[in-house]
Image (cartoon, rainbow, N blue to C red; front, side):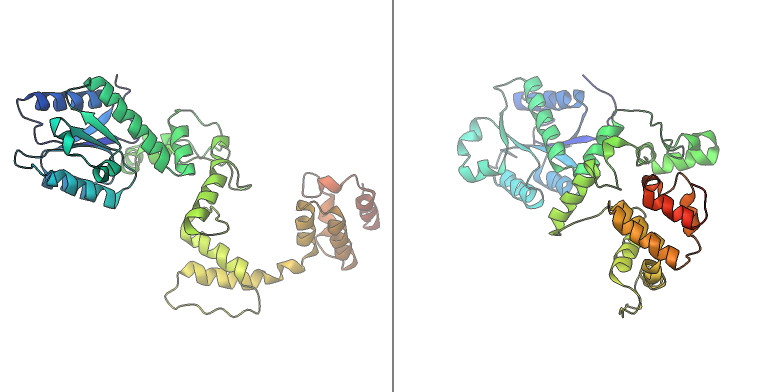
Length: 343
């Protein structure tokens, strides 16, 4: 039933002190572990409370836990299992937990049941069916915890499609053509390079109009941080600093900047001051008005540029530019005539 190598491992922790024992329970648990492996799940085995704690504290990528209710012949109060349940839920409230019990299940109470997702009766069902239940729980867990964009990116990558778009985004194949390129490819890994995609991949949405998974991820991020809006930018925190500073500070403003602030903050403050006069450019304002659907406002700005003999105004005649939507307007043609330009 193996489907081959997965992009992200499905890890399952099995905690049972009889994993290597020559007993009915030992044989059943080993058969269950094999059945999980046949379904492409990576099984991590722990035979003691201490061993299980070490795994839980060091590996948050475990996506399901199969925990024996009794851990040791002398554990009549089930203290070990209760300690592990408390540890699991203190670190992750969502990871599915299957409690493996037999006759000792009579000691279960409501508090314990609230901490587990399902019960496994060792000798009352087939290992194949139980493994299927675990797989279904893992898939639900993965679906629930993945944020919108990550989920969409992994789903797209799992289609193994060629992406016929921006030439520079080739999945890292160019690196395979030289020794140093191979080393680069192996160091960063194919998943990273295959995820280097263009904005033209429609399934992932758009940074420009905040649509699709990108738009959903921005809404998700805003909800997590209690913000009104959140925006996705490229080029990391440096670009984020520039966006924030250049949208908040203009010429004449005073901004107190810590001497240890990131250089991108200082650069943004300097650039914001220099660009503060950009709104004095009537052509810039006209383009903005046109982008907002305000043709009348755009014409008012064009007229302002004409009266001021703005040096770049004649370039509005060039076809294929920002002004094509106005080209058939009588007011636009009149403006060209007044500049002695051909229609």
